[in-house]
Length: 232
Image (cartoon, rainbow, N blue to C red; front, side, top):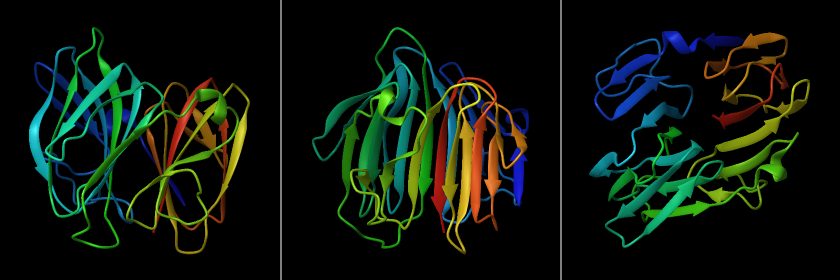
């Protein structure tokens, strides 16, 4: 089963500095049919204006993965962490027992990012934050694990969940194949251009909710990046 969620049908929020689309219910956007996908709880497509961002605020017991598509985001938290995650790179925050943080665009151009929340396997873990560069050439034509709690995904940033966030860069006509074990779900979002997943068209920035598929073949119709969540 592959259900396409068109970009224009996603939840919307806009103010003077944030233009956001919500793949699942979030904040004031509520759709009882879209409360998440397995343990994937949030997938926000955010555009943050220069010199603005999310001020200091708190989270608990959630694994939060941020994939930056354009520009850069600057993180600070009450654990003493500070750092910048630039386009193509990824940051992970395990909220655990509680963390206060800010995410601000200090650059001169809008920052585009995906904010992905996954429910953890264990509550009350020690909070942490990490950012890492993932050179685009390393994922050209192949999926690599960016953040994962699965032992097989060596080299990925750790999260406290039986889940993985994977990414690939595809040229027009290129394809990648990803196997899904029994009982697992996937959610796929292409960033720049459309793809087909097992022959089903998925436009740029739309979401594809996938279940009961042993294998998915993702083929790019135009040059694009794809981000894949593999979750229970």
